Length: 181
Image 1 (cartoon, rainbow, N blue to C red):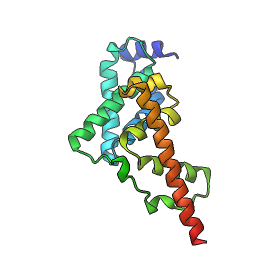
Image 2: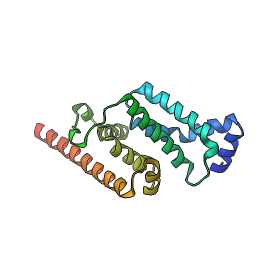
Image 3: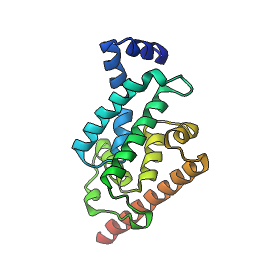
Image 4: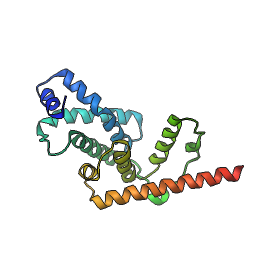
């Protein structure tokens, strides 16, 4: 089923289409919210709220962009607004420190993925957001610009800086482990 058919069916009130919409975009919404909101219960509630808003506002979607971009924009903005309301701490780039808890033994691909996600979670909000959209969700630069409202140059800059920061963190950890040998 293509996006237009899915939207038409959701708008007509089809429960199966609503379930399909949620299952198709659940991972994207979780990624967007998880990069901003740390508490599991808050994340779960916010993800549900995102889908309520998506379904409520779906009649205003005019296919000017991909449906995934539109949904990611809603999720991102709701998460940021939630964080502002809760006054959640946003880490300054200079304050990002490598946490020893993130250095658990990495023995499998799944462990490596979790390890990398822990590293990404230590980055500032904007860096986490653009990295998640670009690498995990496969969004293009113009799509990330649409979701975040940042200029394209800023998006590219943040992706570059985030990769550099992650590289520095990994190199520092490798030096620590070599020193222990």
